[in-house]
Image (cartoon, rainbow, N blue to C red; front, side, top):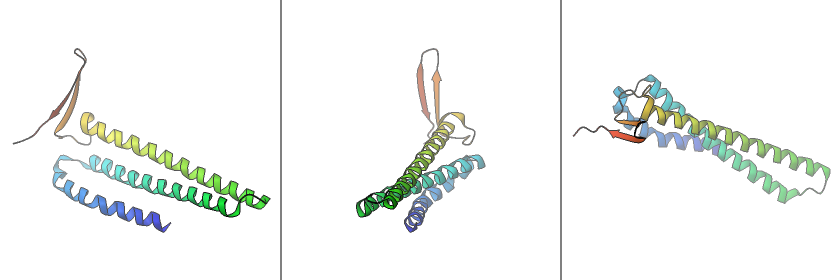
Length: 142
């Protein structure tokens, strides 16, 4: 459990410079945009923690299996319990990973196309249905 807290602190420390760099662009992002970015960061951290936790559960199961084997009924049922616990943690990690991917995809879609949370972005995409061409416009002030 201490590993998870250390990992969370590490992710938070790594995200601080990114958030401080984005601090100068506050005029371009509304509260909805900051909410999206905060939710993405929290989901990414949660995914990392869930994956590490699932990996630890699998390692615990494998080491316990080598240690006690399933020679008695009590050992067998204990191994089955540990395997079920590891499988549940893997399932949770997959679900959180899928939710994180969906949230990141929506944030990218909003940034590039919808412009609800990021109204004054410098990147825009487009599609011309008549010619079937995609466009990407980058507005840069020189």
